Length: 343
Ligand code: KG4
Ligand code: ZN
Image (cartoon, rainbow, N blue to C red; front, side, top):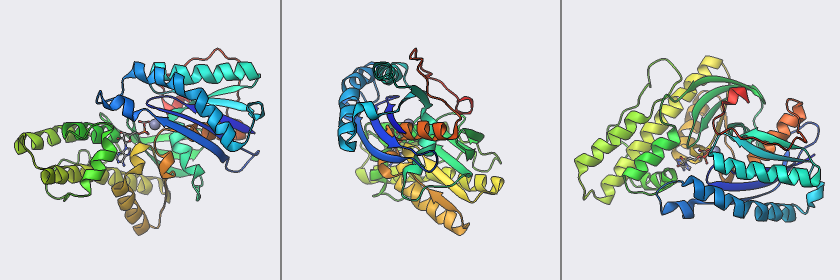
């Protein structure tokens, strides 16, 4: 079964083709991605209308690129999967519209996929895929959740952020430091030149006994430090602040992940979403998991941020298990807000 996946929920257009047998982990045949970062950079963040228009321009050429890379004809695709939500409504409509139009033209069924399920399952495309069950730490620009994952579609929420997401904390702090958009990778790069113990920043909800997170206070603390440093803050102090901010975010993510492993008694942690690319997070998780004889799995670096491969994969894994069926009803809708537990 060949599944073509289309991702267009935010500022990346992704298309990919996976091949899946009746069982076993689906294989990635090809994937292509266009990031809109350069376009949005001038505005300091994603401009939804520009994002939608750019998805329209990119999605078909990317699909052609993927098919030619995989050496497959369009007619050999069995199912067309697309991100149904959550995300920007206009951006989602482009991917869903193109996927359903392709399906209708080819007479092939379509399947809408939950974006976060894509992230969550993306480590299955790595060379050393995880096994169920596991604890998942989902850390993206819009979400920070800890889940117990028993199988595809069986997600039990253990804790989540009560305000900003971890990626948002990176992005907002970076913006205040004048590091541009997207801030996460820029802040992480600057942090390499700083000392994380320079500034004392809050670690909210660290010891409150729950697996919930809160990052809004951190943003305020960073702003306060920047005000203290004044307008001509030197590069070295900025690097120290970047390192201290990253450490505060990472420490909370790591401690809560370890608490989730303890609570569930599971020995396997899966990390997914854009912040999963953060080197300091990976370093600390590796060390803490090793201490506890736990395994930790990440997606390939290229598949940490949004991509079409995870959408094709999630669709294929659902179809393999018979927990979703692709449909020839091409009257699509999108779900800009969509709880994963309800997917
Ligand atoms: O999963 P993703 O591509 O999009 C959403 O579904 O939200 O995640 C994007 C987020 C952004 O907040 C970005 O700043 C963050 O992931 N990010 C990072 C790094 N790479 C991406 N944060 C920290 N360190 C990184 N290396
Ligand atoms: Zn995402």
